[in-house]
Image (cartoon, rainbow, N blue to C red; front, side):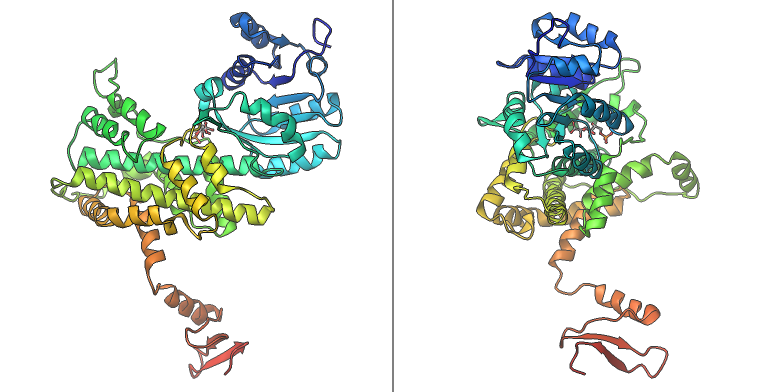
Length: 485
Ligand code: 6PG
């Protein structure tokens, strides 16, 4: 029972740091929710309860008391640091809960951990749901985008509760049952990878406007503000203008100029790339964003290379169309990054036997999450037109958008290269597009090289079968299997 002796709460939150506290406050603010709260240190629980008496929280000191304060099917959302801490709380809850109850992990857990946890907890008859929650601290309080996995059964109880707190776009809550076991955390991982790519592309656009066009941060903020009223509208574009407009109180300089240019990462984007590699899915936009953060975080290597350089290229004349060219290049590169992200979702669903509705994922990413943007509506439409398209780049709207921006995209990439401005995101995206667009790729030569040094064989364009050339012998070609030789 709770401290007042009755099971009155329909939902509980464990872990009351900022994200957990904000989620609990969001839950409590919604009609029909009574929220049980528990934190390992009771002080934090008392602080939340005292700061928000209007929330009507049901506090507990022990996990057992917390469980007893929940009406059945008991439903608790764990909001603790991903990793061992999550496992410890799951163990405690599994002992205190009963079959039919629901344990939700709302942290940024690695989806393979969630698959393992869901299987283990399910054996006790208790439901385990890994739910990606995106939108940061503000999103948790005002309305996140929520990506729950787990069983359909659990979602029957959990869904309405999550829908009561999620962001809403065009009357549609930004939450859907993504798929079974780890599907929710997998899709959240892809969200974070796309987030990294989106942020990197915006940063490259800023770098070009700063160092080729010669604009000051405040002027670039104006440019981003204009872009935010068009098809590049997004939360990330919006906050970029805010960051660029910020003046450092201490020096009076633009804040962006006093921030050390070494990017950190909690690692979710790294997981995206690692898993895309395992899935055989090219996610160059996301990978280059991850590597760009790594390059920036090796100052000693950067300094050493700089010491060997006596001159850098002269910055090219930007030209009158440069600003709009950068906008077009940013949009085209963004299309590529999202296309790659959704390719990874398709491949993950196939490997882990999830039935993921890509349109539904794009729909719940329209609001609440870090990549929220009008752009997601275009992806919803693309998959509504044809959910089986082999790439978002094949969708007529996106194919046309890239074609319209292609010349500008190429001008920007070449100007950047000639000016010595690093554009790993723009460049990788353009090369990915050109790789898909090329009728013949130099992979033919790679096959020849592999066959030369490793007898790894190759196929021919003009007949079925697998072949090997006797490179160290008379260099005749032999059929190795299934050919008509
Ligand atoms: C979100 C964010 C969030 C992200 C942190 C850390 O969806 O709210 O993606 O989950 O993990 O902001 O991001 P970094 O990986 O860049 O440190």
